[in-house]
Amino acid sequence: MVKQDDTLSTKIAQNMLQRIVSQEFPRGTLLPSERELQDEYQVSRAVVREAIKLLASRKLVNISRGQGSVVASDFTEPVIDALLLAFHRSQIRPEDIFGVRSLLEPQAAALAAQNATLPQIRRLTELANGFEKITFENGSELNKESLVQWGKLDREFHQLLAEASQNAVLGILIAVIIGIVWNAISNKMPEPAPDRFAVSIQQHKAIALAVARRDVEAARSSMSEHIETSLRNVVSPESQIEIEIDRLI
Image (cartoon, rainbow, N blue to C red):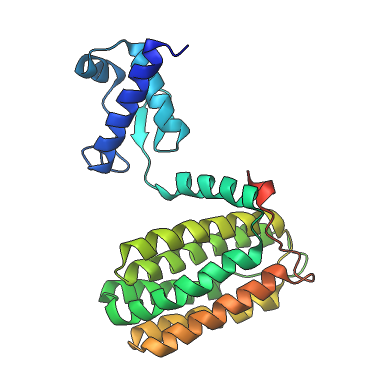
C-alpha cells in the first residue's frame, strides 16, 4: 500500500522539479529551507525531506549538512546514469558509442565554424593549446593525475565545440556521450601511452584552427579524423582501454 506521505512527497518533488526547470531555482543556488518549504506546501517536515531526497536521488539537488540543499549545476549526470543502465541492458559496444559520435560531432564542428562567437573561439583555442601543458611519461606516478586533467580539458573542449554550434540539442547530447566515454576511459586506463596523446594534441589544435578560420569542411574532416583515431585507441587490444559499461554502474 502506498502511504499518503509518499504520494505528497512525490508530488512536491515534481513541483520543485518544475520550478528548477523554469529557473525559479537556478542551477547552483540554495533551495529554501525545510521550514520554508514546509510552510509553503503546508506539509510535515518529513514530507519535505523525502521530496528533497527524491530530487537528490536523481542528482538534481545536492544535500549538504549544515548548509541545506543546492540545485545541481550539471544536469547531464542524471542522463549519463540513465543511459549507462540502458547501454548495459542492450549490451552496447564501444563501436556503437563512437559511431554516434562520428555522426554528431563532425556536424557540430562544422556548425561551430559557422556560428561560434569570438569568445568561444578564443576559449576553444586556449583549450586546444592547454593539452600541450599536460605531460605523460612511461611508468610515471603522475600519469593518473595527468589523465584526470586531460579528461577535464577534453570534455570541456568537446562540450564547448558543441555549444558553439548554437544547437542546444547537440550540446546536450554530446555532453552526455563525452561524459560516458571519459568515465569509461578513466576507469580502464592506468598507464596511458604518451605517443597517443601527442597525436590527439595536434588533432585538437587542427579542429580549433579550422573553427577560428571559419573553415566548415576542415572543421568537419578534422573532427572525423579525431573520432576515428579515438575509436582505434579504445578498441585496439594494445591500448587496453575497452569501454565496459557494466563496470560503470
